[in-house]
Length: 433
Image (cartoon, rainbow, N blue to C red; front, top):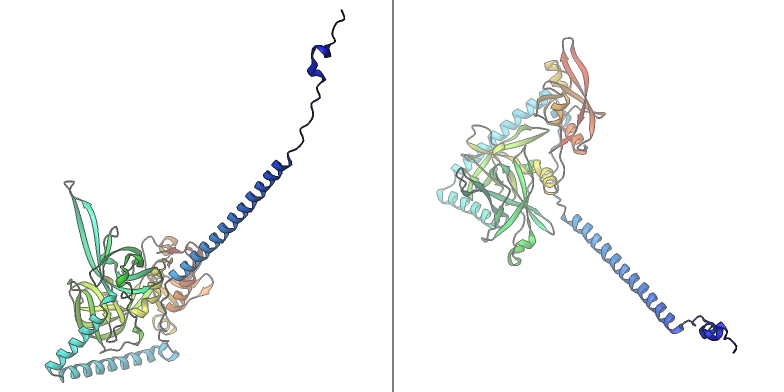
């Protein structure tokens, strides 16, 4: 019997494996799905891009809208005639005569009116205050503390505030920082009795001013339109004898109102790195803080603990025009360049009378401020900063406004020695406050 071959024994060996023909319908289906995915992904990417651009643009627009802008008033320009010592003395005497005449005229006018007329005048001034109550707020700060026996208690401070600006998102309130010892929990009481939460924006240690903000969305819509900033007047135009209205925490009493007149102007008070003109009134005081208004209902002055001279029995305020740029910077949280020096001008006339070199005489340096850390001492006379010659307070302020905190500049000064004044230089790193 013939033996079978291996092919007969294993018939599958004769089978030929053929490559399966491609499923064209399935391939077309997958290609269609892939194209659809690409189209959807591209559409999603386009939508996301448009959304991001829209949000970014909205953010930039919101940021631009949120900037507070307070127009500055033009300060009186000192002429060459008034810069001369003799002319200044004559001008001062003339001004004193004019102030005395104005004050005398004012007293005569008051003496010439009847009691009923005086009562009507006071009523009209009170009406001015009432007409602007929506711009006035009370600020309540609650500070939670733990006592000696582990008991919890709350310390509450209150102060008056004036709404001085707003934007699309917030209202901004000016107040006396010294009256607000806590910033953990700040509530603002609006004129209609509504309480809203506020946050501290920034404060200035030199003047004692602080700016708070309240989000508009936290104010009930029914009264939102009624909450408006008070108009800021031009304090450069104030005159001695002009009537003023004082409001605030006068002599420690809440929501006080008093009336008086301006008794003196241009009382220069030197702060560190800045000088402000104060004006005095005959409004009697015993502590406290507040604000000064004119008969047009405009804010013309701010009273803080730091503006009242020691031992004074009347209110003294900073003219609002003097601090408009400061309030704007505080509201926008801008950095304030800072050296920490008090200065006096040594003009040509003063130099001739005192035998001192011309320049800016350093009268004091603040502890641990940039100037002191660099080695600048009282009685040094600064003549140049960062290549800019300085001979007046105005020139110093103009330079400081353009300075950048953290930047190091060269300060040239004259220092008295055994052989007279010698030039020395300091590397000063500009601080900020």
